[in-house]
Length: 496
Image 1 (cartoon, rainbow, N blue to C red):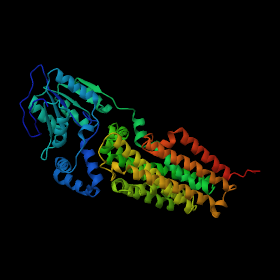
Image 2 (cartoon, rainbow, N blue to C red):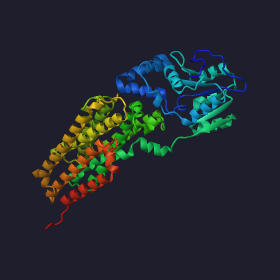
Image 3 (cartoon, rainbow, N blue to C red):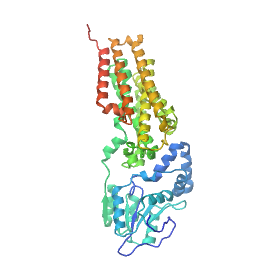
Image 4 (cartoon, rainbow, N blue to C red):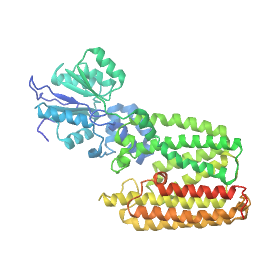
């Protein structure tokens, strides 16, 4: 790193500047990086130790923000090289250094992280940060910078309303992805300023955050409707309502899961593009939407019927346990995932007040356990090929690949056997006009599951087998063929 004085919020530094080389001061959260370190590290800590949630509130009330940041910093680490740095800001810094200007990093984040960022980038003359006694934000940051460099003695790059206090005493302002209200206040102030805007469209980001494409999984809610042939208007409307409430609930948990796993996601080849990992959506904005979505979903579930409401509460409890605990347990995570899919089938039956076959439930457990194992296999295979270490947020090792593939195959083909037994059950056969056609689904299942395993072995499988099924041409044709077989089994068509 270039020689310079490393300073803290309560430190002092002799300004490394001349009248023609005004220092450039760079904010960190939301500016140099498209995220917030305090929020990230808080969720990382709670993801490992959710029981500390009340402790964090107590520390905040008793010691303030500076104390809270120090408490979290002592217990949480963050992957500095993989943070979502804003390329345009990095370019501005490099240009300033090329001009011989001193560049300082000034952040309200804890000094542990600020110093690590400064060391990693290696372009800063020095840094200012929060320590255990002083939260370097707003007026405190303005006073420190004015004391060091004088009024109008520095240029400042920031991003939010609280930076207006610093900009008021800066020579020049640079606003990075700032809200329109902040830009309007800068304009009214008469301060010379530039804007850097590189965020993707808001609607597109939210749709990606909610993982709308994953709502296809909730199509399992319609399985009881189809298997019981309850095609009356009321049952269809109830199933549609169940689909909508389950989709909202699932999306709210996706947000929490992404917030907890943000550090691990950044090290993943595809998950790093998720909005929170990429920094294209503020974590607090996303998390704030969670209680609203859950409230709407739970109220809707109650109006569908109390039994469906109870099933969805059970789903919510299991998926929350999975997010914070079960996903780190060897094979327990696979059983939990299979359970979460199977609960959707149970929920569909509860919504229309029908009974689902035990054979169908057993089939669901086996087939979705197989898909969960394929998912784990693909994740480990990607790490193996990229020569990455064993995952820290999953209790698997790269050497487990052969046994995971074996378990996935065994579970998948058990599912085919169970479906054959389901199709042969007298109570099920009595419901269909041509029940013998259901057995034709077995070879389709054998083909699709076997092909999925082969593609995973060849490294041609998507991280999520469900997403793969929606995008893969052969998978779509297999699904259509299975649907045609089901309709043929249901339809009252004379066959010779």
